[in-house]
Length: 498
Image 1 (cartoon, rainbow, N blue to C red):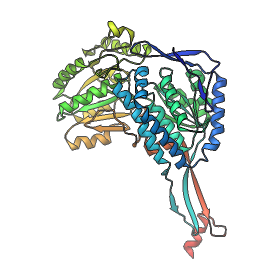
Image 2 (cartoon, rainbow, N blue to C red; image 1 turned 180 degrees about the vertical axis):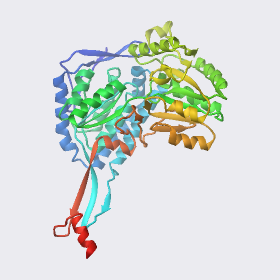
Image 3 (cartoon, rainbow, N blue to C red; image 1 turned 180 degrees about the horizontal axis):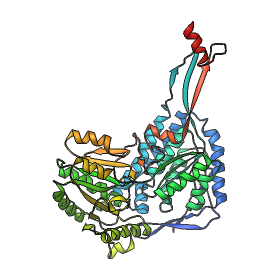
Image 4 (cartoon, one colour; image 1 turned 60 degrees about the horizontal axis):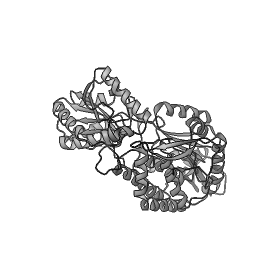
């Protein structure tokens, strides 16, 4: 029996009046569950419940809100293996990465719970006597969370954890490729005891649910992770309402390999960075920029390693790389491989859809490596699949110029044993994240996550203490206990002359 899910609105699972869609295992084609395509009226109902719950939730002391996040983290930890298998069977990342997806939920909810006792403001001296000046954070209101399929539990956790500890209720619209992960995620929050209406889940199309959330007059902030074109649409629509928007829109992330790099360490990092999650991370290592002195050695080792990767069902512990997430994703990646061939990029290995046996039931593409000119499309555009472009650089300055030549600026990496290059790269790479002697993936929840240029045009950051910025606003408070009218700027002159 294929399980049929409804919508989670006002603390209850509800049947929907809308049509239904299926979610599938991208490795086997198996139907996992069905979900509703929510109607506009159902979306409006979810926002109404979120608005009603917000008035109560914002008055709950932040440390108490943190206790509920911590309880959710405990449940996620207890159910980690079960939830990891859901991630792997619905999204397609290998089981070790499925566990990592859920671990990130646990880590961030534990971290966010602690923010309930921190959430610092400022207390500063007044220019007048017997007067206090301070700042505090307040929640913006009900918020909309629009999440992608590649981290189907971790990204909802980043967004919802920050919203909840800030005092915001939310409506979550997950990707239609991974609604089962979102449903299981929300089931845990319900079990943890969040008040009815604080947590809402609405599945459906971007045109109805996504656009509806952004346009709804009672939604006071939108947090969106996805593609640049959709992000621009969200940004423009939200600007018409003058509400807060957090955007994380992808990357074309470089690893720079200097001529003094530890090649064994470099290769370990490149393989994980480029082909982990089948390259379907916004932080994936999409470009390897290699110093000309070691270029030939790196390419030879890279091809040898890529051809040894074990491709198959991601639930198998021995599998190194699973399928891409969908037929559309497979089509897009194969189209980029064709572009590389037509532009005369040199195909070093891979470059094909895998067929035969169990491969025919899923969306498998061989790990692909191209030698690419810096001005070709494979060197400039986000592919979001297991395709790595290798570029040759003359020296450090040339490598950084290549790295900075794209419209994205999320993650970056340099492999070197020379502190001069490492410290210069920290300042000169145009990216929100820079790793030294590690690949472009592996963010930790206690630090800000986000980018610059078209990756993050709103300059918001998820995770870390900066996560609260998306869902709070600053209030400045003046307390005058002098017992008389004091006038800032005017009375200070009087004081100075007395």
